[in-house]
Length: 294
Image (cartoon, rainbow, N blue to C red; front, side, top):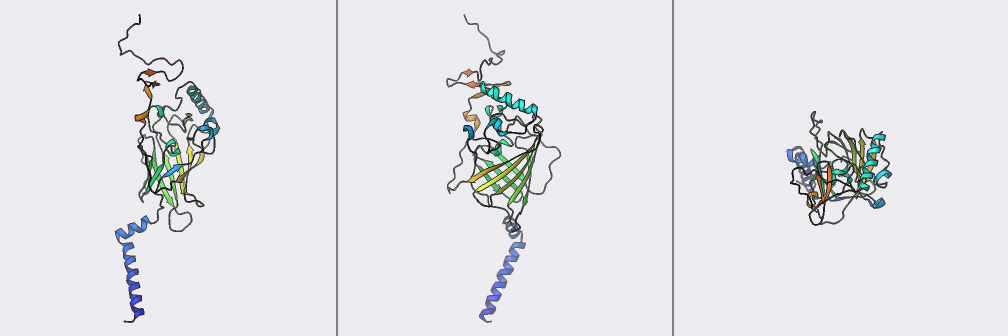
């Protein structure tokens, strides 16, 4: 057999081996996984600190009313009352933070901590910082369950799309439905979602074509407290270090707020209960023995 024949035979064997690998269960799995994007690493939010506040729903606008949320008149009043209560020391419509409740959608994607994406063909997981916030986005072709249980993050179903036809997915479209647990707000000013907790979220998550270190999450909120759908583009930047640090943080370890009934109080440095806002009455002490001061 000549040298040319040997080379051709070797090439044919290699081609056959590759074809077999792609048609066997393991090889097929590898070929399928190769279609999905590599979003590994730590993605930190890009939220300019307009007015000294970094956590905002729309990162291009300042905090509070400057967000220009398309709220109905009823929920404009809810937001105004929330900020007025906060000016007196209260929590307004942002009581979840004081009581260490999960942020829920969409606040969790405003990214108060860095994100980590774990992409598999069936599910994309979004882990948020070193806390217990996370999302599951199912991409296995399922439908929404008929009887959804209320959660803070909602139930998410996604679809991968190859927008440029190169054989590799580059866009994740997501729909997230409730019912949701409340209370929820867009930001710390108490910018409200409707109290019926029936929000609907649609997202388009993709890597920037011009800068691969930037990830976009275009979030559209459809909510009964809005006069129209509200869309913003959240951006995240990929951390360049090879030794990533994931800080562990739990609200319950550091909070100085105590929720009693429908009110929130403050725990002073000496461990005594204090009012959180001006002229706040004490909690109901009916189960404590009262002693009169002489």
